[in-house]
Image (cartoon, rainbow, N blue to C red; front, side, top):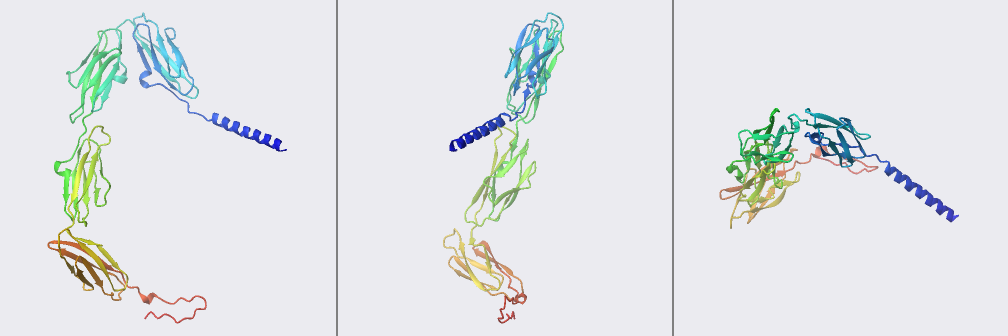
Length: 405
């Protein structure tokens, strides 16, 4: 019986495993059949030749010559692409063929093949009619199909834009644009017996990012304040305070300026922060840094806020600090319900019990030494209104009723 049970369990496990494998194999994959736009038009001179076309396919596909099959054929069809072959064109006129790529679940892709005849012809795809470069410049090869000699000239011969012949056409070389404005050049490709082909070259300008020299180092007094910084830029900028300190923040950011806000410094040390401005969309543009410094407090009271319980008299002690050796200080209090007591570097504050009027009270204490001062705020919470209190009996509790008076 035990042996039969084991056999049944093994059969069940095998069935589950086969089902799981089957489920995994049946997972659908998205069909794909694509050819780069620049390779969907293939050109030949009148001579026989062949060229490879790259294909991205998720499965098998067919490449069929729909028109021109008497002189245009395909070969070496595989996952990476296929080859287009043409025979010599002995006629004067150019000719075209159409190749259709097809795969189940995918949209057909059309490849147009053009072969020149004996009459003069010059082919440059519209893909190259406008060539753009970033501010850093670079090279771009323009593919040319021609059955004769052709010339390439740059109007005005600017030093920043030059051309040179290569096997498949010609190369456009552009240097770095160190100016502040976009620039352009016109290239003309000419061949006897054909219409000229014009190519426009456009290059972006060097990105601008700067602030005035006086705004790169900003000093604030101990009381703080704000300062609006004007940003000279050719693009959208980002600005942030490194470390996001609470005492130095940014606001009112627009496309041309932002505001730096600095709160009061209650510490005895100078503090500083770094603000960084960048243009994320422009490569090679160095960030602009602004250093913010703030003067230290000459006198520090710690804590700077004291709260007393409601309706009670009491006393609290605060510490007064300064970097002035052997300093002494005074405490100026406008309200008589607070009595100060100075002992060395400490200040004891005694408060009277507040009158019963249902409200709290707050007072400011000014601690001074020489011409410097620091502030301390004292708050006493309101008395509880006993008239609102009453007895609450639980069960058979019969104790004497509380008299709020």
